[in-house]
Image: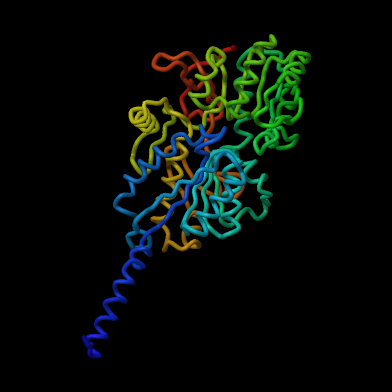
Amino acid sequence: MTMNRRQFTQSTAAIAAASALPLALAADVVKIGYVSPQTGPLAPFGEADRWVIDQMKTAFKDGLSIGGKKHEVQIILKDSQSNPNRSGEVANDLILKDKVALMLTAGTPETANPVSDACELNGVPCISSVVPWQPWFFGRKGDPAKGFEWTYHIFWGLEDVIANFTNGWKSVATNKKVGGLFPNDGDGNAWGDKELGFPKPLAGMGFTLTDPGRFQNGTQDFSAQIAKFKADNIEIVTGVVIPPDAKTFLTQARQQGFKPKVITLGKALLFPGAIEALGDLGDGLTTEVWWSPSHPYKSSLSGQTAKALAESYEAATKKQWTQPIGFAHALFEVAADVLKRSKDSSNKAVRDALAATNLATVVGGVKWGGQGPFKNVSRTPLVLGQWVKGKKRKYELVIVNNQAAPAIPSGGKMKLI
């Protein structure tokens, strides 16, 4: 069959139009990358992420209007495996292969820092959370005079956790002798830092700190630390350890007859599953509370209060609420707000909208420039909680000191173990 010139022109135009169709559709897709620890010792930090992302798929089902043009939203979740090297690898995959317009990441410096570094290097806007701002900023060699160009952070700082821990300790009777458990990782090195961390402010408040030195995560024997704490008559134990190490330390402390009056640990005691795994050792332990059903904030996306969001999670998963729910949800609140305000979905336009954020979220207000120490940090409020035997659950986390953030109601007073 022969084809005249007119038929040939029509045919090639049709082929060109058909082949261009997927490209046109592809151009209308905006991708959000999310990196968190789904497996490994830090997995409790990422436990609620899949549930939150399912909520977001519903919230974004009709797409988002970016620069006056409707975009389909794709969320790509990657597992950092609780490993800094893996965090960097999956971040690079999301940037270079998936071409994400915006990166979200949360769950300790071991995940958030390498992801933030990859974004800074490649010029991709990134919002990180669930790392005190000092290990995130200074751990990445941040210059206070310059800050970062592409990476922005939402969380509290060591000044907040120190204030809350010591507010609690001052409310009970102890000898003010504190033993520190600071591992050799991003958090431990920051918390134990003589200038940035606990030593200087504790000394200024009349507390004596015994720091037996750094140890590796996954340590199986805390006998040396326990012996030192006993020798120094320590009545308060603090630090920032992963959940398995808290269990090892607390079990061995009991076996070796070390009974402090107060145990206030960051990181390890945040999660209901970790407390239940401790059995009777969980009763009376204290920790920081960065989000709870008591927080007086609501979602800019769904309109849910913190209480309603926690109840929705419990109803769907049959699990107890956990603190990272609020911050995972808030990251997407900010992401949606940023994309809606962007002139287009280019990296620079998204970054410019990100820097100009001023949003009320389920974790409180988020605003860069004016609500933190540097232009890239937006601080959120922090209170102190204590695990007590519950009515509905085996243990429940009760806010026992809100001096640092009076807008968040307390539910009781701190008690000695």
